[in-house]
Amino acid sequence: MMRRLLHLCAIAAILTAFAGCDTMSEMVTANLPQNHTGRASIVVSLAAQEVYLYRGGHLAATSRISSGREGHRTPLGRFRVTRKDMDHRSSLYGAYVDDSNRIIKSDVDTRRDPKPRHAHFVGAPMPYFVEFAPGYGLHQGYLPGEPASHGCIRMPYWKARQFYDAVHVGTPVTVKS
Image (cartoon, rainbow, N blue to C red; front, side, top):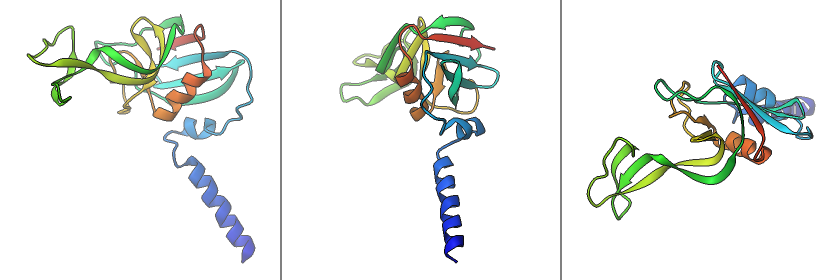
């Protein structure tokens, strides 16, 4: 009886560990040893809608993503991290709000949407922003299961934080179709 109870407790512990994972790749890499040393690099696969973090050439983490949608494609190529900002806000996309911070108009593009009278712009939050090209980066954001951003790479909160903590300015970033 005691042996069966221990077996059930072990199964419960394993299920609890994987409960926060949303994809098979996250389950496989969620508990990878964090002792990989060496330089970090990032590879983004737009076709798979996944991003991979390597340390010293070894896969250290993966995450599902939401990349740029039609008309706002994520750029392809080889880049380097140019800046990191833990509390970044968009300078183009967000909402117009009144003096009490009540939203007057949401889903605003400041280049196209005129500012209403007595309103000010509040940029969309982009926590754990890792910029790799001017105006493009990885950050925490909503993941609807398909490309949906204005070109950035959206990630779940805890993965965005993990990637943010692992990279530095100059880290290579490769974006593949």
